[in-house]
Length: 233
Image 1 (tube, rainbow, N blue to C red):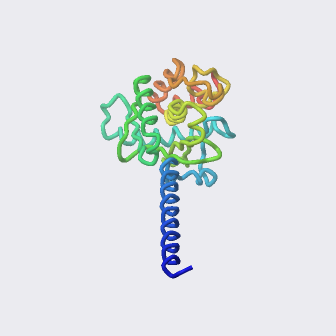
Image 2 (image 1 turned 120 degrees about the vertical axis):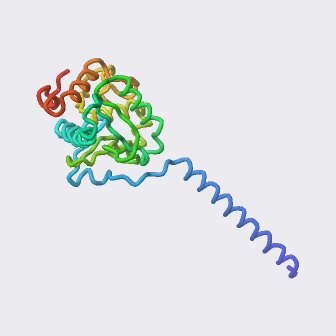
Image 3 (image 1 turned 135 degrees about the vertical axis):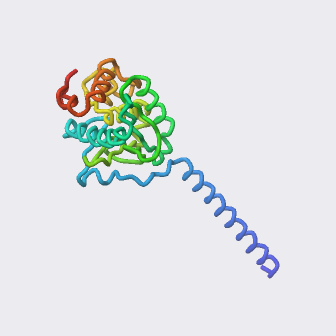
């Protein structure tokens, strides 16, 4: 083979390598764009002094519900003290760490705000609780350390299996003081994943709405008196 042919073959090989590299780069970029970036989450803290309540059930959740509610109410009530004339308590949330679920979180807030009178959910700074997103074998859950640091974690896979707005509204229900009731029907928002993936009800029923209004009207004393740590349905 003469030198001219060797140089031609070498240039052809180099061009093929460049095309292959470019194609691989585009494929990787497309794959990366298709998967939501996992936000930095405190999910790993769940086993380090954190308590949590999940969408499909776990141990000690009834006590966890109260811990989450106490932390959020304490934070919200402290802010309200600066404006004692307000009849409705505003609970502020930060959803910036769950961008993939921005629409679901907004819908969840709208659902609760249209369902109850004594508490209102509002996005903003100086948040009482936060939303995070990512992958977790435990699924979606609400978690707190009991000292005012609470968050709702939304799991990618579970939100594909179940109605995503229902999952978000359910976990937000823990923020407002409601316990899980997995044996309940689909018409109960707090039955969570109990009725199965076919359940798409996103709204609290009359009993759930009444309980939230009572809790936020009377504070923590109502939480204990009404037995929010018991299965009452």
